[in-house]
Image (cartoon, rainbow, N blue to C red):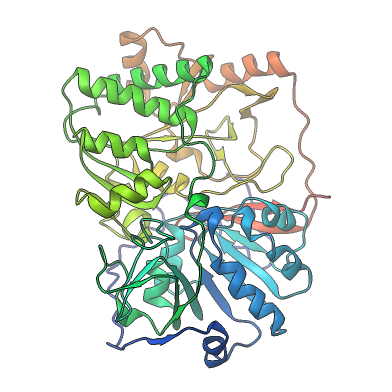
Length: 501
């Protein structure tokens, strides 16, 4: 692992995937209070006594269709308040107005588990005054509930509310399905403001209780549900991607984990969904029924639930409108908080019960460290999300990736940014061969015996890629740190440096 010591305030380096595991009971009690209802956000902001230096939070379940963060921050900006720290569960292209606010000192720091669009680039270009944080989806609730990240005011985009202030992600014109990332904020923030465009007599599946809410504000529109669908959510038709998926399925079948009661998670990328289809076919062929699938849920996982291939789904965010519809009506499609999903210190976390997880990578190095945070040019392009959480929690973590994409190899001597430590990655599957972490010697022997897969050391795979692309130039880092890659336990995996525009 990289040496990150010697920087002021950054001497908390990663020491191992479970070295800081400290199981906790997260019972947080708040007084039974009733929220105050208003139809004027300005009035509520006046009651909050806003001032310089506050930390305020938002959630991202409306994804690129979110209106609430921009609405609140525009009003704060016009009030002339400075030095605001934003603790958003994720940042999307729709949040571009934050760029000017970073430039004029309104916003000086951002904490998030995923960054994309203009804000990500602006941070990479050094436009934010303080060092930003890229956490994991499980690291965020841990830091909030344990007091490492103290939130002054949580602004919760609330698709549906009842008349006493209970909140649900299901219902209303801006339904997003689930509010898993907002729940820790509601539990721990000093003040909670629920912003909604739909109040009803009766809610489906209450997620955040009224007594956690201080103020309710009714506005015209909190977001656009169509913006929930972002990125690839369809099975790849690319023959290369389909070969990777078939090879991955062979590995899963031979691993011994594909049996009744197994648990599974995959991302929403084209190759990952192709793996899910291959696994589905194996389940049908061998009459296997899984216990649960989890994570951000999409229509493909919904179909597998409805076909009774899994007992349950555990959903922390809906990736498409089919999932939004399913979670509102299907009692086996469960809503979960990010704490329940992936907090390392929660002994009952769902990701710690996973058998198999399928993940992507923009880079993987010879020590199996994975980067999904920055591009080959060093610019922030994403973040861990649940990548590092599930890799550590699952019994078998598999990276699926084309060996070479756009003449750039996925394998490098050392990744630009460590998002997920190599000790938690088990297998890399590419169209040119499979590399297995040497710690799995028995699995290597089993796969060589039972399959015709090209299994080779990761160094040999890298040589194949280098012959196709040539030796890539190393990324030249500046000396200015713009962000840190934080592990799920709060330690620092890596530093992210400024890139010249």
